[in-house]
Amino acid sequence: MKSYIIVLIGIGFLFFLPLGCSEQDFLQEVPKSKLTAEQLYSSPSGFQLALNGLYSGFRTFERLTVRGDREVMMGKGLSLATDYYYAPIVNNPHIPWAQRGSYINSTLPDFEIWFEQLYQMILAANMIIHRAENPDIPWSDETQKNEVVAEARLIRAWCYRHLTFLWGDVPLVTEEITGVNFRNDWERTAKREVQSQMEEDLLFAEQHLPPVQANAGSTSSATAQHYLAELYLILGRPDQAEQKARAAINNPNYKLITERYGVRANQPGVPFMDQFYDGNALHQEGNTEALWAIPYSRQVQGGGFNRMRRAWVLWYWQNPGISTGVQTGGRGTGWYAFNKHGFDLYEADDDRYSEFAVFRYVIKDNGDTLYTTTNADKYIGAFAIGSFPPTHPDRPYNWPSTRKWEDVYEENPVDDQGYKDQPYLRLAETFLLLAEAQYLQGKNELAAQSINSVRTRSNASAITAADVSMEFILEERARELHAEEHRRYTLLRTGTYLERTRRFNEQSGPHIADRDTLFPIPQAVIDANIDKEFPQNPGW
Image 1 (cartoon, helix red, strand yellow):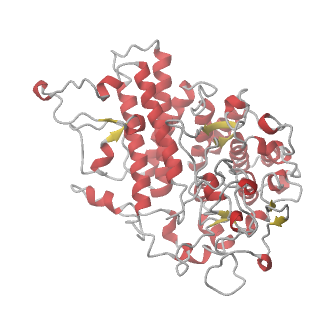
Image 2 (image 1 turned 60 degrees about the vertical axis):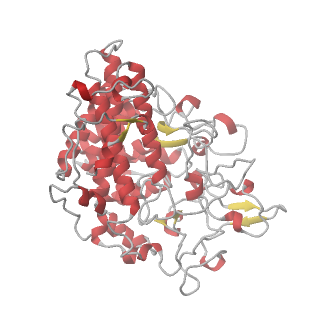
């Protein structure tokens, strides 16, 4: 572990760990104008500030993993180079993304940044968990303390979820790190041991979090139950996964969106898309499907921005006759896209593939319509080097893209950033985890019912028990969670990552290697662990 990941922690990483030998009184300082850990962790309000910092770190990580300059196999939810996602942009036309084998290595800054950010959050969570046990904290009662600890433990488990999917065995750190116990001899903990700690954390969170979010960006017991269901699937315990998924689904505070509501209820649309509109996305705004959401605000301190529109909306504004991004969902850059195989999964009447959910056309300044297409003979835009027509264009200007993240700031419609609130975890995914758990137990009739709960609300045809298979569940996840789910994680935990990427991704499939199931440990981490060898992942 690198020494500097010890330093910045707390609310937005604003305060610093005490330096030096704190046991010796003559070295202690009593700062009068700075926020120190001792001052912060002296009251419940201070702990809430620290939790705000953890949630800020969560938003930061989400933004760090949605960027385009060095996206290789990541993307929204770390999803590129999978079965249905590909990278339309080739910054260097001579080296397509999927073929940058030598470029993807342990010195790539992105790996270091992600690793560092996750461990910063873990260390901040550990400090909250440890210092909450101080008997001098004036908690109103044990419930208040346990709820604070539960939030920190859920986020710690969420961090280790990413770390184990990305790197496998990673150091398990559950104590507060100070100048006294700082180490340079970390070892990689077996993934199963890390997952056992995740289970403990999530069970504690399930027990002590409120049944519904306390505020716009926080979590609830249902959030913990969802992640427990996924974890039990990873651990090969589908009966327990079914139990936890059902618990979240049966929480009366949550239900699938099946009727129009909110800010565009009187405009043409479909219920499925209402939950993605700004003003509708948060649970407090009527989104009963949101287990976890990310609030953003423009020109508000701490409000932040997201990159989802920039990442997922294609380059429609580059077409002649379109002068702004107003008619095209804002200025998209199209770093990521669903490939043709993904779009071909939808039935014609499925609301999730309707004009309200996918850009089927855009309107030019003069009122003309530009239709999007997956037909290679009708591509518009720049192309990667190779024979024409290529399987996928480079920066296609008329390829379909999701409308979940369109975000027009009309005073500056080509602004790079987005500010709309973002549903991060939805109950629909919990239904699909439930279906998977039921299928793995041979309960195909029940699995079909769970899948149909998601399908029928979007006018997709109902299926029968005979239709249920892992292939169908993975396809349904793609249809429902397009540009949302951690697709790479889904394929890894179901053991289908390499096979499906090679079968369906014409861009990346021919080049993906067995080593790609794990990313390289950042070289800076290996180099900083000077007192013990820190093994690299195989193939890197």
